[in-house]
Length: 95
Image (cartoon, rainbow, N blue to C red; front, top):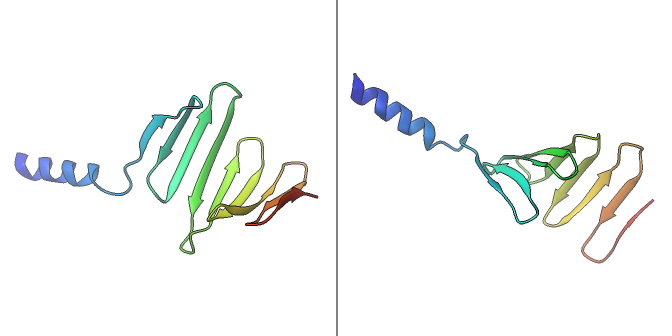
């Protein structure tokens, strides 16, 4: 019975649902398991969470109400007040 419990515990720890957290060079705490990520910046009080769908598009929500959709370094951001910003391979800007 003890062996089964140990095997189940090790299996649960090795699954992809296990998120590894660390503090990056900017002082932000980030957690990521490949499909979902999140973080908190203690200097500004901002938190964020991000999820990737099957097409590889990451949707990120901030604690202040902003939303970004990105893929391969390109994307669109909508701020809480409705301002839209974009970044493509050749340009970037807001309107």
